[in-house]
Image (cartoon, rainbow over all chains, first blue to last red; front, side):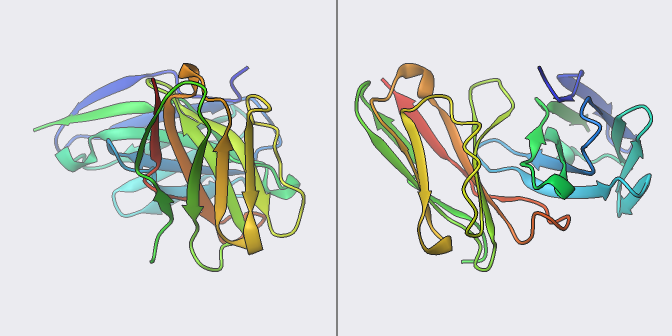
Length: 113
Length: 115
């Protein structure tokens, strides 16, 4: 069973508009969440994270929102740029339990010029 | 180097042969992880080393897979008697302090092709 789900395999957005990537999880022990971006032939690159004690974290064009009651998080990219086109992975960890990071299947974002 | 280094970047091997994949983590990072990504799939956890603790091997798909981490630094993932379904990109990552909200930093991976 998938503990971390990204139900949209792909997403297309016009340059300059907002991109919203969604992630759902099932394990209520998860307390640390991350987003990674991956280009072809490269390893995933860390983008932004959020601890379960917060509901929002912002870094430049990237904002992550966490809704613990719904077990849902989202990544907002504003404004979207063509260079943002990549596969985005959501990941979760139960840090207080020393557990490994569980990744979602990824969402391929295409930002159209 | 500044990042996680993996070698080789590509490996083609015949079915039944053994392979060794190497990972050199970021200096000072206490935790080291191996994941793999099969074609069209997400990242699948394999094994996790944290300091001197016993590794978490819960993700290893079969007893043909093993990994070690020598001196708390370099790690080697060994696949014995490779099968075609082992073909994937094997990714190594390290983390400074995984119990205190430190993210994973990945290498570029080793693309393994079993013919």
